Amino acid sequence: MVKLNHVIFILLFTDLLYGAKHVCLQYENQRDYRGNINRTNSGKVCQKWTEQTPHAHRRTEQNYPNKGLGDHNYCRNPDDEAKAWCYTTDPNSRWEYCPVQQCNFDMEVCRKRGQRL
Image 1 (cartoon, rainbow, N blue to C red):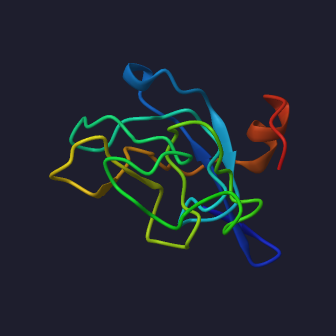
Image 2: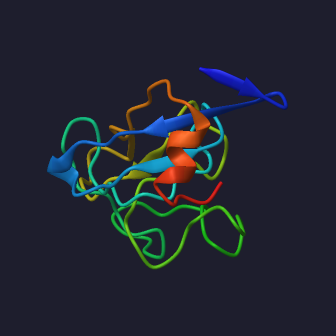
């Protein structure tokens, strides 16, 4: 990894199975992940952040502004967990981590792809 100004920049390559794209990340714990992965590591579908069923929660856009939450079911990390996660639509499984993969890269590669940091 390239360490610049005490921040680790990471290029994220996500599995095409989840319809995601290349995304530039600034933090190792994926708190700035804004991709469109909407399934967990075990393949469970994510619950929309705006819904309270099957799992009621306080991780809302109002309670966690500027954390990428909203009317979608994409994986996010609003509360600084170890990595991106989501509530699941499975009533027997409240939440799970998501398959957001990380790898080393040169920051210029990210910029050349037109990603915003």
